[in-house]
Image (cartoon, rainbow, N blue to C red; front, side, top):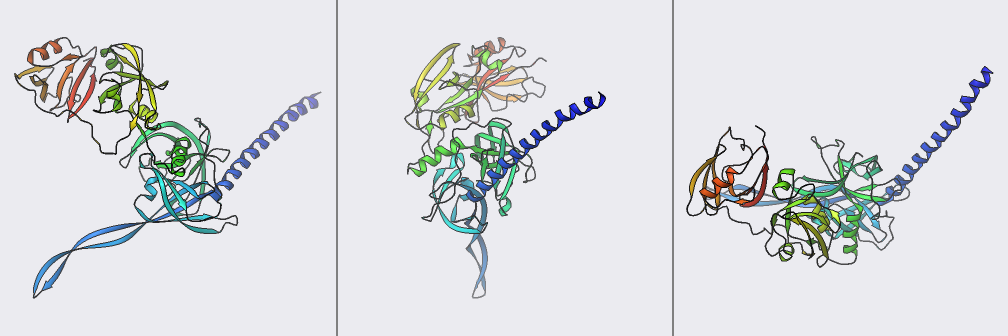
Length: 456
């Protein structure tokens, strides 16, 4: 009886162990298959850029030294990765990999693992999304990977990164999707709606493929965050859905055009929402409406609170930009917003996004205007006039120290206009920092809302 009792658990354990081994082998095969497919379609990109140096050199004429400036030009090499996404030889990569290149060389492996080299030319792209499309000069059909635009990776899904780190051999690394919808700024470039993964990505991986367990492309590897410049566990990719839109435009011969609404949002906090007459709602406060923009034409105003765009909730500027940026000029966007606590909606016809560097018409910093007088409040000295209250000095012991800055022009306090010393005193008298105060001000020529709450 004791022997039978001992054997029965063993009979139960061995089938479970065998099933676990089968599952592990199945997962292993999925990784093997994905790596094998990627091996033929993920390519190394080598670029040549022209550099220049200005050097002042002495020249001697009749015994006199005359300084002469000369320009020396030289070639600079760069490396990156790319992924073939079409049998006609179209390659997706990052814009920063090929930006300014005068020559682009693509290296790939054939079925026997031997290296082949092709010349590629830029076909188009979207610099704002850091995407570029290349096309190889060849009539042959190429192996390619499918852009899985219809897939929405989930946090915790497997992620497989393939590329050529540091210009070395093709490398395959694996991890998981650790975050979605990430916005960040790296080396002066703004990114939004990125996939984050802990699959190892290093310099040279830029433009390579991020695959799911099926071997489909779910992203184009784009950036890393690293104090040392090497992999530190946080890598980012442009989602395949966005890359597919760019590629479709380029292949069809269309110029990539992006929608534009013409507002900037501030993420609202409870103090800001309460002072704007809204409670128990989430949204983004319109900080600025650009003159001549679709938003202005549709009647949106500064201080309105956008809560959704085309039925999708919006709380941050990045979320709204992403919703609008992926649309084309002429498309309509349904904006739901709050004004003075009332929910309203408007259909906005989007325009084409202006070229980078087109500045909004912002109010000048200016002076407080006529009838100005000095007023002190909460350790701050103001020069109040018709156009607002100019901050002259902020005391270090002020509860507003670190929030209000010298040179700020206060236009409103808790929605009460500040148009002179008397109005400033009335607005200040009704403001309680323990309950929270909302300032509408101009700083360095740019309007902004600022909420402050202090219990001391």
